[in-house]
Image 1 (cartoon, rainbow, N blue to C red):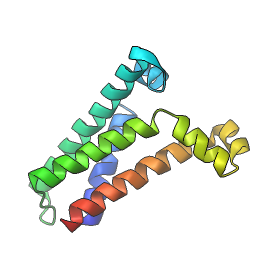
Image 2 (cartoon, one colour; image 1 turned 30 degrees about the vertical axis):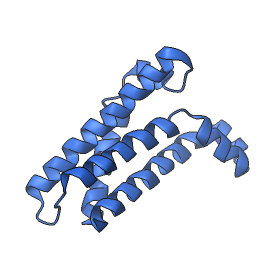
Image 3 (cartoon, rainbow, N blue to C red; image 1 turned 180 degrees about the vertical axis):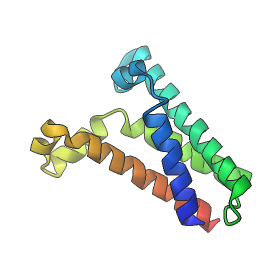
Image 4 (spheres, helix red, strand yellow; image 1 turned 90 degrees about the horizontal axis):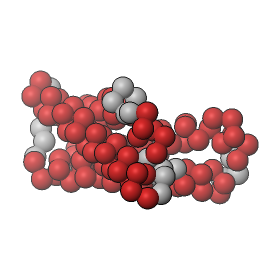
Length: 132
Protein backbone atom coordinates (compact mmCIF):
# COMPACT_ATOMS: atom_id res chain seq x y z
CA UNK A 1 0.00 0.00 0.00
CA UNK A 2 2.94 2.34 0.63
CA UNK A 3 3.78 2.78 -3.06
CA UNK A 4 0.18 3.45 -4.09
CA UNK A 5 -0.36 5.98 -1.29
CA UNK A 6 2.95 7.71 -2.01
CA UNK A 7 2.10 8.05 -5.70
CA UNK A 8 -1.39 9.37 -4.88
CA UNK A 9 0.11 11.96 -2.51
CA UNK A 10 2.76 12.90 -5.06
CA UNK A 11 0.12 13.41 -7.77
CA UNK A 12 -1.92 15.58 -5.41
CA UNK A 13 1.23 17.51 -4.53
CA UNK A 14 2.19 18.12 -8.16
CA UNK A 15 -1.35 19.25 -8.99
CA UNK A 16 -1.33 21.70 -6.07
CA UNK A 17 2.20 22.98 -6.74
CA UNK A 18 1.82 23.53 -10.47
CA UNK A 19 -1.60 23.84 -12.17
CA UNK A 20 -3.48 24.90 -9.01
CA UNK A 21 -0.95 27.34 -7.52
CA UNK A 22 -1.75 30.93 -8.40
CA UNK A 23 0.89 33.43 -9.44
CA UNK A 24 0.00 35.42 -6.32
CA UNK A 25 0.65 32.41 -4.07
CA UNK A 26 3.94 31.61 -5.79
CA UNK A 27 5.15 35.19 -5.45
CA UNK A 28 4.01 35.88 -1.89
CA UNK A 29 3.92 32.56 0.04
CA UNK A 30 7.31 33.20 1.65
CA UNK A 31 6.58 36.82 2.47
CA UNK A 32 6.07 38.39 5.86
CA UNK A 33 2.81 39.87 7.01
CA UNK A 34 -0.76 39.03 6.25
CA UNK A 35 -0.30 38.78 2.47
CA UNK A 36 2.51 36.25 2.80
CA UNK A 37 0.83 34.11 5.42
CA UNK A 38 -2.49 34.14 3.56
CA UNK A 39 -0.79 33.04 0.33
CA UNK A 40 1.16 30.36 2.20
CA UNK A 41 -1.82 28.96 4.10
CA UNK A 42 -4.17 28.94 1.10
CA UNK A 43 -1.50 27.18 -0.95
CA UNK A 44 -0.97 24.59 1.81
CA UNK A 45 -4.76 24.15 2.07
CA UNK A 46 -4.83 23.42 -1.67
CA UNK A 47 -2.31 20.65 -1.01
CA UNK A 48 -4.47 19.19 1.75
CA UNK A 49 -7.55 19.29 -0.46
CA UNK A 50 -5.94 17.79 -3.58
CA UNK A 51 -3.97 15.15 -1.66
CA UNK A 52 -7.17 14.27 0.20
CA UNK A 53 -9.07 13.93 -3.08
CA UNK A 54 -6.29 11.78 -4.53
CA UNK A 55 -6.29 9.50 -1.48
CA UNK A 56 -10.09 9.28 -1.52
CA UNK A 57 -10.15 8.36 -5.19
CA UNK A 58 -7.39 5.84 -4.63
CA UNK A 59 -9.29 4.26 -1.75
CA UNK A 60 -12.35 3.94 -3.99
CA UNK A 61 -10.68 2.36 -7.02
CA UNK A 62 -7.58 0.56 -5.74
CA UNK A 63 -8.03 -2.70 -3.84
CA UNK A 64 -4.83 -2.36 -1.83
CA UNK A 65 -5.59 1.16 -0.54
CA UNK A 66 -7.62 1.08 2.66
CA UNK A 67 -7.56 4.26 4.73
CA UNK A 68 -9.02 5.04 8.15
CA UNK A 69 -10.41 8.54 8.64
CA UNK A 70 -8.36 9.72 11.66
CA UNK A 71 -4.93 8.55 10.47
CA UNK A 72 -5.67 10.00 7.02
CA UNK A 73 -6.69 13.32 8.56
CA UNK A 74 -3.45 13.28 10.56
CA UNK A 75 -1.40 12.53 7.45
CA UNK A 76 -3.12 15.35 5.56
CA UNK A 77 -2.44 17.74 8.44
CA UNK A 78 1.22 16.68 8.22
CA UNK A 79 1.22 17.31 4.46
CA UNK A 80 -0.24 20.80 4.86
CA UNK A 81 1.97 21.78 7.79
CA UNK A 82 5.22 20.56 6.28
CA UNK A 83 4.35 22.11 2.94
CA UNK A 84 3.67 25.49 4.54
CA UNK A 85 6.94 25.30 6.50
CA UNK A 86 9.10 24.31 3.52
CA UNK A 87 7.49 26.98 1.33
CA UNK A 88 8.56 29.77 3.67
CA UNK A 89 11.80 29.33 1.65
CA UNK A 90 14.20 30.04 4.50
CA UNK A 91 14.40 26.33 5.50
CA UNK A 92 15.65 25.42 2.02
CA UNK A 93 18.07 28.36 1.95
CA UNK A 94 19.40 27.45 5.38
CA UNK A 95 19.84 23.79 4.37
CA UNK A 96 21.67 24.75 1.19
CA UNK A 97 24.00 27.03 3.15
CA UNK A 98 24.65 24.27 5.71
CA UNK A 99 25.29 21.74 2.92
CA UNK A 100 27.60 24.19 1.12
CA UNK A 101 25.32 24.35 -1.91
CA UNK A 102 25.16 28.13 -2.23
CA UNK A 103 26.53 28.11 -5.77
CA UNK A 104 23.94 25.57 -6.82
CA UNK A 105 21.24 27.62 -5.08
CA UNK A 106 22.15 30.59 -7.29
CA UNK A 107 21.71 28.43 -10.39
CA UNK A 108 18.26 26.94 -9.75
CA UNK A 109 19.13 24.28 -7.19
CA UNK A 110 16.73 25.57 -4.55
CA UNK A 111 13.73 24.34 -6.54
CA UNK A 112 15.17 20.82 -6.57
CA UNK A 113 15.91 20.85 -2.84
CA UNK A 114 12.40 22.24 -2.21
CA UNK A 115 10.75 19.44 -4.17
CA UNK A 116 12.96 16.83 -2.49
CA UNK A 117 11.95 18.12 0.94
CA UNK A 118 8.28 17.90 -0.06
CA UNK A 119 8.75 14.36 -1.41
CA UNK A 120 10.40 13.28 1.86
CA UNK A 121 7.45 14.67 3.84
CA UNK A 122 5.01 12.89 1.51
CA UNK A 123 7.01 9.68 1.92
CA UNK A 124 6.72 9.95 5.69
CA UNK A 125 2.94 10.43 5.39
CA UNK A 126 2.65 7.44 3.05
CA UNK A 127 4.75 5.29 5.36
CA UNK A 128 2.57 6.28 8.30
CA UNK A 129 -0.65 5.46 6.42
CA UNK A 130 0.73 2.14 5.23
CA UNK A 131 1.76 1.21 8.77
CA UNK A 132 -1.51 1.98 10.59
